[in-house]
Image 1: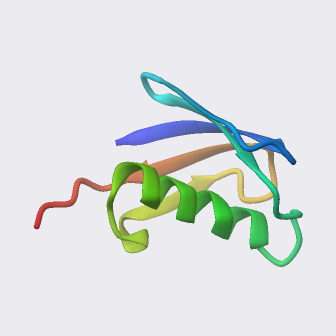
Image 2: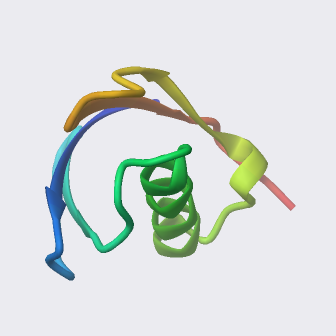
Length: 73
């Protein structure tokens, strides 16, 4: 499933509405740290492995498209 992520820096929030997620992060957008934090938060929220989440576009933008693969145990 493809989600549109909007990033808000230095806020600890998350709002989910259908395929849109607003996510607050604390990491600075340097060396991919912010993207790593986004993936970790999504992994924790959806209770899936990090490997099931992939940023499809917007690697250097506050607006990203993330694909979350369905995961079954």
